[in-house]
Length: 135
Image 1 (cartoon, one colour):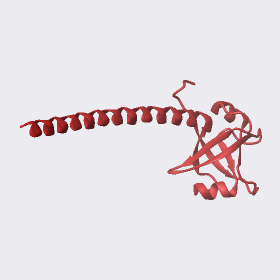
Image 2 (cartoon, one colour; image 1 turned 60 degrees about the vertical axis):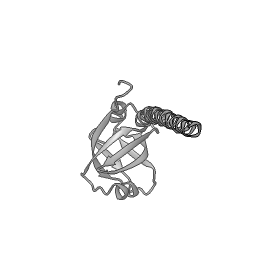
Image 3 (tube, helix red, strand yellow; image 1 turned 90 degrees about the horizontal axis):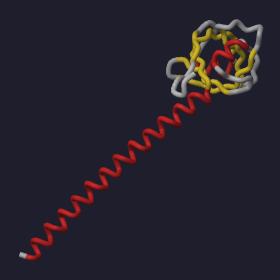
Image 4 (spheres, one colour; image 1 turned 90 degrees about the vertical axis):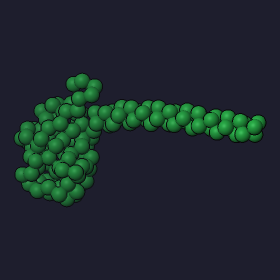
């Protein structure tokens, strides 16, 4: 995987009636495809909603499925059989950090440009007052 490439997989939601919050289960091979280790966090998304959960492998889960606990299904507003996108959280967070760094530099450059223009404007005003006082 390249540094700027985030892997995501579409998975079918399966109901898990266990009430424990913060965990999802998927096939071990799916974890490998996502480049996620057991217990690492993944982002599960449906439309504009996303949740963050620790992922655990389970050979009994089909490769195209993810078992989501009741609270997670409610947060995502998904039912059994719906399709969700699953991504490695660490990759996403690194992408976001890089983009925020780029944005910070963009804002700094803009602020420096404004500062320079204000300085030039102040110099022009001072020159104008000097000329008026000297006349």
